[in-house]
Amino acid sequence: MSKKRIFYLLLFFLWSCSTSSDDEIKRKNAKVEYIIRQHDSVYHAIEKPQKRKRDPYPFEKDENSIPKITKEFFRCKGSPHHPAIQDKKDPSKLLNDCEGYRHSLPMINGKEGVYPVLLDILNYIQRKTEKRVVITCGHNCPMHSEYSEEPPGSRHMLGAEVDFYVQGLENEPQKVLNLIFQFYKESLAFKKNIEYQQFSKSSQGYANKEIFIRVFQKNEGRNFNNRHLYPYVCIQVRYDRDLKENLVFNQVRAENGILRW
Image (cartoon, rainbow, N blue to C red; front, side, top):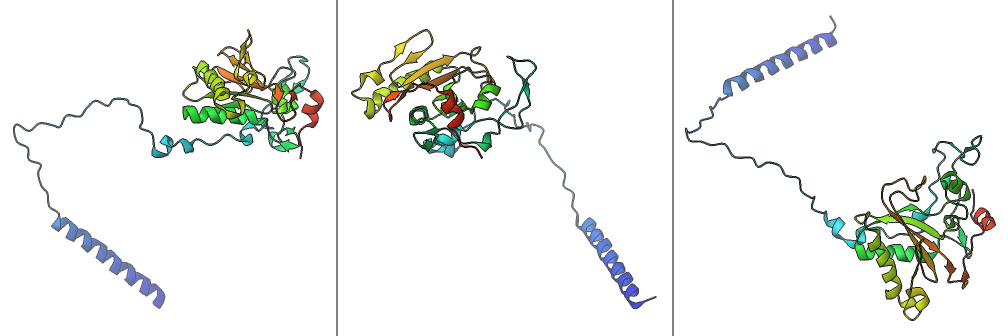
């Protein structure tokens, strides 16, 4: 037998003896104590669990914890992972969704983005309510607009329309409307301009010089982008303040007004 093998056998024997002796020492030193109770001892009563609202975390109390809405929130929600669907106008045709990350937002007056008034209003609502605005539909490229069954001439293709609801006010769209009216009354830019402060009401919604607002109820305006169960508010831009002219939908601009890569 080699010396190396003898060494390992001796090492194993010593380890085994050490382990067994340790176990014996532990058993000898172990003590058993009985639990003693008095005859009048009572058990501690456990209260029945009650459901209660969770206390907010410190960061949830901070207004700054709600992210500021930027143009990035308006990116097209198209995806190549969405399955092909049948075209309702032509059943023999299948519609594929766009690859949302392969194109830009609309080019508006030489810059990529959406109309600034939409960002201003949504951030104003967040500041006043301290609640998140959930954008369900921002920009739609023409391909995604057709896929999601948006009506023809949708201003979503121009970056001039947004659908949204407010967390915590999902079923109170009138409060959101009031905040939009209040935005125009409080903004210094519109203080002396009645055309912006006054809204006319019609069977479809409310309008001032710059925007048109409509509330879609739970059973209205449902499409691929608005599959949730809440009423939602739709804002459309109808006047371009920079160019000082009415905003009219243009299909050529919708098709060619985005960058593709």
